[in-house]
Length: 340
Image (cartoon, rainbow, N blue to C red; front, side, top):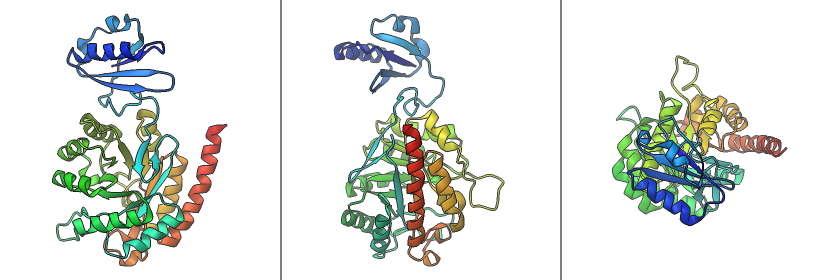
């Protein structure tokens, strides 16, 4: 349930309303926009008399929300959320950001790739120190040493960094090290203990859509994080598993406008895992940009054929530079059309 507060309401009246609601055992989520203040009421709202609430002098109207995701719901928070990723990089609400770098940190060669993606226009540096694999015998990443190398490269280039986290026990390590964005991969899309632990931090969290996860399930994963207090959540469409075998996954490009309609959270796209092949990454990236994504995550390697993992869908640094040129042109067309 949401209560839309009149513009004439004072801070004291708003505080009184919030106290009145919380004294009855409900949680509140207050969103103050340019034109309206919305108080989200979370809990078993069947116990609230909506007519009584609407009769209060400061209430414009009351509306019930049927979807189970409340904090991630655009009805609760009509304006786009803008997330501060660090180093002056903003994401969402018209701020477009590209995340780029190798799938995994492989050693001192990281700085070479990082420098090239930064030069091409990337805003955020990626690199997995702890990697997920279907096989326990496949490479599992460099661990803490890889995290240190990623952070060193980010500091040297003045770029925020994003790295994948898999274990709730590593949250304290990532926070202490200063990772700017913690990524939850598709394998952990419904690892609820991990999501809750991430929700107890103030570090932005990027949620990749699970390989068989519905849009509502992705939003409920965001709700797990947000319910613990962390509202800096980024959604990422990375393809889902279907009967199609020509690509690694099926890129659900229509999920981008659907998510932006349902939620105020920024929406990114990962065209690499969505397609699985280098030749398809750039067209998928252009499609996601045209569909209104707030950003992209693209894996880049100086020698994809020699990559420890995911070389098949990684762009070379030259290919990434050319892709960024075209993405900038697309963004100019999209944003100019929005202003008209």
